[in-house]
Image 1 (cartoon, rainbow, N blue to C red):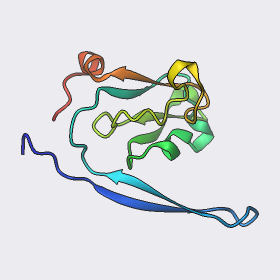
Image 2: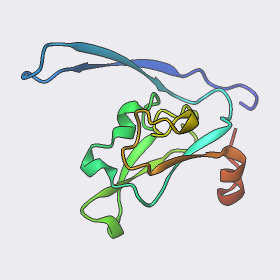
Image 3: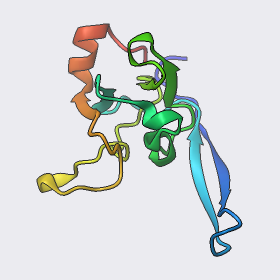
Length: 130
């Protein structure tokens, strides 16, 4: 229905440390479903993405289930590249390495992810359905 967004579910993901490390248990909540409104910015993965050799860091930091998707790409074989689902991205910036005032924070270690205005993304790829 137009005008009404479905409420997404929050799924808890439990990560347990490897047996060689001190035993810790971290519970991380991940959002599943459709977001309520269009974000001001959307993550865009640049050509420098290597997919972190099969274990993308951005997938770990992203709070949205199946937003960052690892896809094989012929020109970067044997690596892969991450694709951001524009309908799931909430614009949280957790995947981006550079924070405000040029300060480095957690995120893509290769600086291969940038945030672009949603309007600019729509100008290039077409209107997002909301």
